[in-house]
Length: 374
Image (cartoon, rainbow, N blue to C red; front, side, top):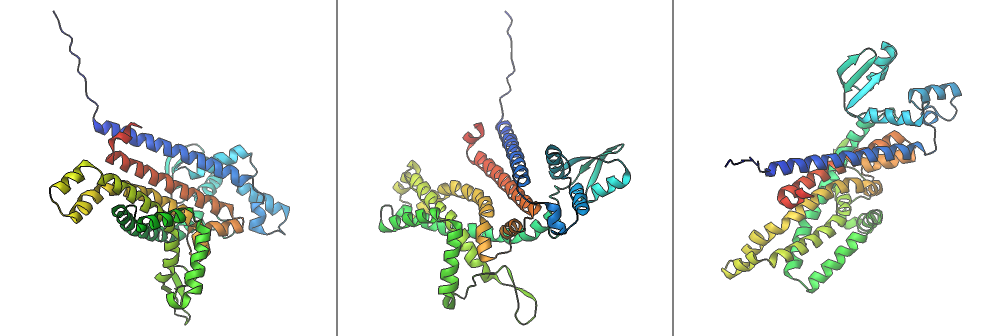
């Protein structure tokens, strides 16, 4: 009697992880495609003629038509959308009638690498092109990269402040459950979560930089660098970072307090904590070496996701305190109807949100294998 042997190769955990990562990348690209489409449609139905914004309201019709042709606004809306996507894509396809037209069309993409040329058609590998500002004619990428370090610094200090203080207060409230300190911290955290960023920024500026200015020495307005009154140029002024960072960190601080408290209470009720206490281990060792280490996983992972949200939510805070970051760039672009700058900044923030959310999802997948099955 013959036997049939079937070799069954077990699925390795690495296969699940690779599938999980690819799925998250696919979702991220799908979200970015939706954001690109929404941004294009939204800013192309707004009133305003870019040619007149660039030339002035007294520009003649011939000049206006020439600029609109260079911007591609003489084409149907569908072709304008395809050009917009082609500019954003790292792999771009271009076709020109002659060499002079091709050179002029590709010059704006520098630096780029030609991958393939067939007749008048060229395939390029290039950085995403966010076009040029209507007002200054600078590349939108250069404008964003100039403001990015200030926003990154502000968001990093804000999330660092929220993490350190939030974990400390969260642990303290968990150890003093149902005490007056616990109730006060919970009420304060709820107020912090419900307080709008714009109102919080105005309140902090008025209180600490106006009413208490003689004691705090803080300014209502100012960026990372200030101009010396005696004509010695710019200097680093870190005190201007204090109020914007504290204001921006209020909401994540409130959430981290709540998350740390609930996570600590859950861990403290586990069997291994009761076992550690039964063995006679010191209270501080049980709390900080065993309980806190296990309670911090969801807190740190959530804080990573909040970092991207802070970059997006810094718009109002930066505007109130005149902090020269991406938020101020967006507001100034809206005031001047400089649509390429606003569109580029919005798309940049969206990309940051998607990348960091994918990174956070991967961390969740590493920490908890059950997430990989979703």
